[in-house]
Length: 125
Picture: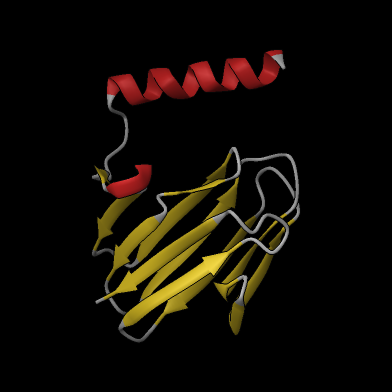
């Protein structure tokens, strides 16, 4: 528990000093959106959430998910009700990553098969 609290405190300090160079804008339901026209973009999994929950990228962008939780999560395309098999990655624990390159414009939903409330979306322009 002390480790979790120390990590949360460190992250709060990072947020206060503005060390992030990526713009994050709040939208409904506490989700956030990040616009990133560069060749690579990232999503962090932390405390059972995809951050940002909505990511906008250009076609050809490689998105990398990084697990910051100590347990297994998946990055599974589609929804829990209708997985679509476009991509499916397993992140075994803290520090593990999964990457996928989005080559076509569209909206790509994804979720964690172990924790169906964990959902995210990639919008490709």
